[in-house]
Image (cartoon, rainbow, N blue to C red):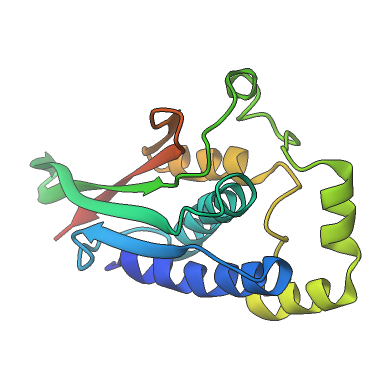
Length: 194
């Protein structure tokens, strides 16, 4: 009933940073701004999946496209809308919370926008996918750090599944370039308080 996105961000950061340091020898740091104490009633596993997938994309883009960019900014804004409504005889306070992940990894090429939400679409090339999945050291580290999860990227299911998860509970996910310097991904969670 009280999931704190900032805690989820930090847990995902530790796992993804470990993979980045192992594979690339470097990693960007994550800076949380806004309200890190904000909490919402939500499915923790869904939130962890969504934030993890977006952070993996941001870490990869930053390292590959703009290694001098050292920060990924996560903004947490609670109570975008907050109102009370009556359901039967009960009054419930409805709340939403927005998590924006901003990287400076160069942005998304225009031609990728039309296929961004397609299952199987990836910007990883065959050599990167083969390299990322063929190393025994990488595979072991990934299993240990993510419980058997994927590498930094490459399967093409992260964004479409994240969209399915968040929309299932009335939220949304938006992806846009921030002045061609990087990408903003905004996840709006729809939940309840009190």
